[in-house]
Image (cartoon, rainbow, N blue to C red; front, side, top):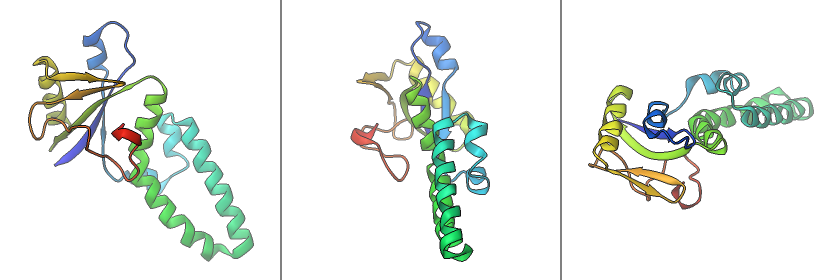
Length: 159
C-alpha cells in the first residue's frame, strides 16, 4: 500500500472545484529527483527548492575543487538520496506556501483508489476541518490522524 498526501487548492468559494483540483502526492522515493536533482525542481515549478539545490551543488563543486572529486562524490550521493526521499514533501511545502491546504493522508494501492477513497470520504461528510488543515476520516486506510508523519523530517505539530 502506498501513502498519499492530499493537497487542496486555496479556498475560492467553490468547494467542488477545489476538490477537483486536489493534488495527490505519493510518499515515496522520487527517482527523477535522485537522477537529475537540479532539473526536477524546475519541471515541478519549485523555484525556492531549485535555488537550495543549486546552492548545495555549488558547495559540492567547491568541495570537489578543495578536497578532490572523490570526497565530493561521497558527500553528494547521500544528499541526492535524501533529496529524492523528501522531494514530494518539498512539493507539499511549496504548495502550502502558495496557499494550498493539507487535506490529509490516504492509503491505497493505486492513485485511482486513493482518489476514490478521499472523494468518498469528502462526499460522505467525513472531512473535519482543523486549524489550517482538513482531516479526512472514515476507516483505517482512508486517512490518518494528527499523529501520523510523512517523510523523514515532519513539520511541527504534524503539519
